[in-house]
Image 1 (cartoon, rainbow, N blue to C red):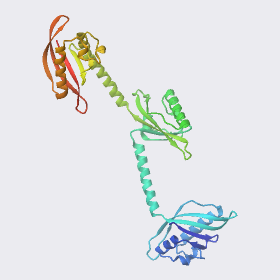
Image 2 (image 1 turned 60 degrees about the vertical axis):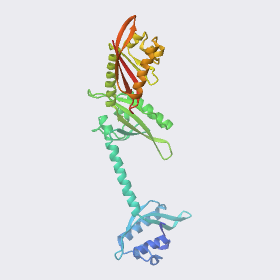
Image 3 (image 1 turned 180 degrees about the vertical axis):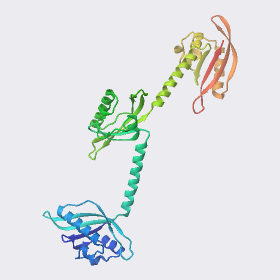
Image 4 (image 1 turned 90 degrees about the horizontal axis):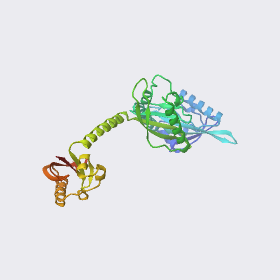
Length: 361
């Protein structure tokens, strides 16, 4: 489907294929008039003819070709311009050029594709540059080949030339450099990247440390070997701070529940105790750890009390709702009145999974 023409070393047209002839006819030229003539003799555009002759001579003198070049052939008598991609190859006999083959194709679709690819490239570059994650590429010498805005910001590199620099010149600690170099070397050697890992960026000038979740991606050369490594860093500092605050709040809540002056216990749908505080353990004569996984039937309780309590627990698990009533127990030989409150616990889907019991003496 591509246009093909052959000229001798003097530039005279010797032959053309069907596609070339049809193309010339569409743009107002009779291809039969070309045979035996040079482009300078048949072209009404001397500048174009001179450019084509120069290109032909250069390819013949070098005895090589294959480099695409765009050419515009002006339309005649109101016909549209013809924009083509041209590739020339010398035809050799015993190493000597005897003719020149020219392949050409209407480049409108090619130019549209190039415009599309350029648009995609610019979009990709913008996304990578402005992405809220650190992005950097290093080569096998551990030198930086590219880095985005977030990386330059996190490492205070906005005002410094960094491309081509060894990573040791901008990392903030020797340990971080050693770990990064060791990890990269393993990737270059094996072609396999490790799982994501956390890296702590030591804060400079009194600033807080930054926690980065790091992912490394091998970039392979044409021969399949790893030639570069892309490193992606996601800032999880806020998450770590939230984890710390949650841990502190969880510790405080656990302490309150553990030492509260009321008995607390939670059972699953099989009525096994999954958690109990010390007050309940003391009343049951067991430690909270010993009670985990036990049911009321494992404790020294009257059968009728067990059946009554389990009936209430099952009702709450099946029907929901909170109940409050007073139970009478013999504890350490003394009759005690226990205000009992039972309530369900649900999972994120709203399914009741546990029943919690509070007992106030």
